[in-house]
Image 1 (cartoon, rainbow, N blue to C red):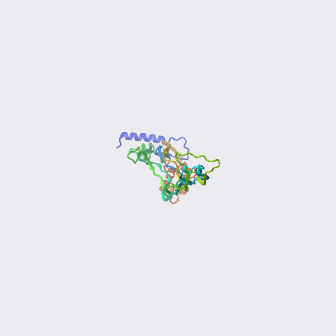
Image 2 (cartoon, rainbow, N blue to C red):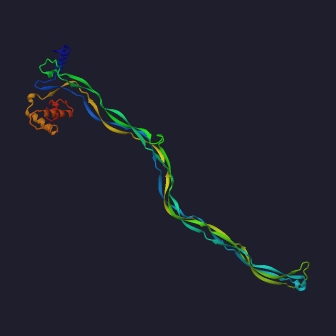
Image 3 (cartoon, helix red, strand yellow):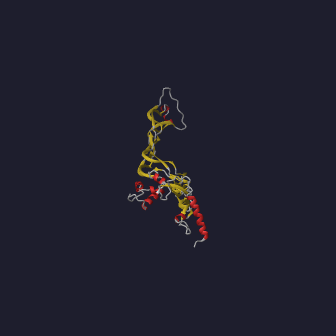
Length: 410
C-alpha cells in the first residue's frame, strides 16, 4: 500500500522530468536524441606551494689569500770591522850634546842621560772574525688569520593543508521510486543533487628553530687560525767580530848630554865657538791606528708564501624561497542540468556502424576486444572511457559529438 505523501511527490517529480524530457523545440523529425546531465568540467593545474619562505641568511666568507714569491733571511746583517794602520812621518833631529861653554869652563857642566824616542809607542788593534752556526729556523709561509663559522640552521616540519579540489555539487541517480505508476520504472528514476566535499593534501613546510648551540640565537663562531711555518736552514751569529787593543813598544836611544850645574852661569864664549851635536832620524806619529766598522747586508733565499688579503667575514644574503609543486583540480566550466544531445538512432545502428566504432576505439587504444560489429558491454565501456578522457558526457551513448570525436562524422 502506497504512502500518499511519497506517492504525490513521485507523481510531481515524474511530471517535471516528463515535461523537461520532451520540451525540446530544436528536435528534427527522423532523428534521435538523448537527455544527458552535463557534469562540471575540471582541469588539473600545477601550483607551487612554499616549503621554505624567502629569508635572510648570514653566510661566513673564508679568508682570502694570494700566492706570492718572497724571500726569507738566511743570514742576518752583521758588523764587519777593519783596522786603519797608523800614519808615520820621518824627521831629522839635532841633539846638543855639549854646549860651546863647556870648552871654556868644563867644571860648570855635568853629564846627564836623556832618553830620545826614535819611534814612539803606538796603539795597535787585533781583529777577531765573527763566528756563525748553522741551524733550522721556522719560517712563516702562511700568516695567522681569523676564521668565521656559521652554524647550520635547524628547521622543524610544520604541516599545512592545501586544497587540491574545491567542494562542488553533482547529480546522483538513485533507484526508481517505489510508488512509480509508469510501466517503465526507469522513467521514475530519482536524481539527487549532492554536495561533494573539497579534497585536500597535506604539505610540510620548514620553519627555522635556531642553530645547534647552547644559545640558538648565537650561531657564529670566531677562531684565530695560527700561522703555518716550515723549517729552513739559516745561519745565526754566535759571536760578533771584536777589536782587541794593544800598545806596541817604541824604539829609543839613551844619549849623554852636558848641561850647566845648578847655580852656574853660562860662560862667555868666543863668537866662533861651536857646541857638539848629534843628528838623529826619528818617526813621528801623525795619526793613530783606528777601527772602522761597516754593515754587511743580510743574505736572503727565495720562498713561496701566502699573503693574507682579507680576513674571514660575515655577509648577509637573501636566500630564495623553496617550493614544491602540487596538482590542483580547477573548475573550468560548471556543469548544468539536463541537456539534449543527438544520438544515432537504433534503426541506423547497423553492424557496419558498430564495426567502424570498434575499429576507431581500437586504433586509439580504448578497445581491446574483437571487432565483430556487436555493441557489447566491452564496447560500451570503451565508449564511456573515451568520452571521459575527451571531455564528453560519459554516459556511454553514441551521440553525434562522440562519433565526430572518433572521426566517424555524424
